[in-house]
Length: 289
Ligand code: NAD
Image (cartoon, rainbow, N blue to C red; front, side, top):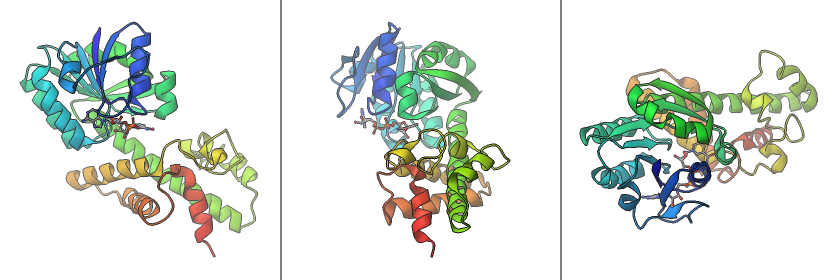
């Protein structure tokens, strides 16, 4: 397939490289990042998009996605599919899909879980919103970049699934860190705490797979001085999106709101920016008296 790939940062570059390695003809554009191996550079986003069967975008936020969509949709050939893999607000996802369909194009929102490691190893999870027929046109490409793809429903459903998942992640990471800080105060050994909780009803991905305590559980950013991994500011971005969606949909999400406030304080007023989101643990232990 001919693929246009726009946004070749930490995630987009390895994803595009995996598509090229699988034999697809990939033309890329990024305002700053260099081209990954196997990807041909285009002079503009429009040039990357104009002769593509599928255009994939992997951009920082909804505002940039909307601006890029405005410029590439008129350039794309009839019947081509716009596949946005960025994490953006549900509204932007729906708006861009509607704009693409009006122009005679297909469109799916297909945000990912799995981080930079997942992008490099082709083991991402894709959650997809859009028509089944558009999903069918991109499914084989998603399977190259990932190991699991779920069609979640109509346009916006992929972003909805993503922000609900990450709201759970933010809340469980905070709960796990709080519990470790309490265990410390109670004189409970962290390894014992892990051994019990990871096989009990308090278990979660945050505890079992991404344990925030250094030297405990499988290797995680905590063992690397909390270098990200998944940076606290990216968690804040996703919690902002889930709260924005909750307000719009009149959903009651008190734990999501509290997680958003804690990560906001951590990133903006404390030393959280640039640290992994599991660095909430040293944040809690430094606050206790
Ligand atoms: P990044 O900042 O490394 O990459 C974004 C790229 O987009 C940059 O290279 C930037 O130069 C480029 N860009 C910005 N404006 C552009 C424009 N107008 N035209 C072309 N290129 C433009 O970010 P990332 O970590 O690769 O994340 C990309 C998306 O994936 C985000 O929406 C993020 O929330 C989501 N995501 C990231 C992770 C992660 O662990 N990094 C995990 C899951 C989802």
